[in-house]
Length: 95
Image 1 (cartoon, rainbow, N blue to C red):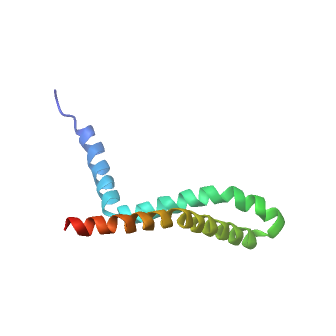
Image 2: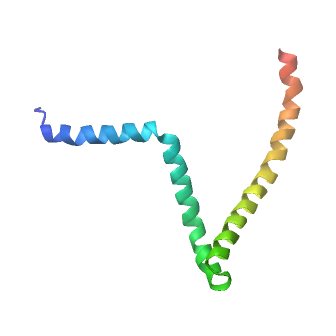
Image 3: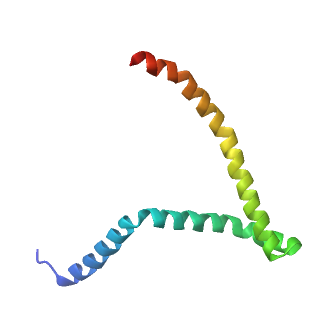
């Protein structure tokens, strides 16, 4: 099987791009998360813009996202704390 140079010209830039994505993976992940949140919130902003105006619609959407995030934390954190308190004496006994 003969190696063709055109494959090398395709592999090298791909390797460079993948290397840069790996190096900047935290920044890329934040950008992707921000993109997903903006895609989820865009229809709500468009709906609220009819009634509240552009700035107030965006502010209300961000406020709603904050409330939803807070409710998720309020639901999941207390059971995790209870489990940690339950397992804490068991871990100390093993040591």
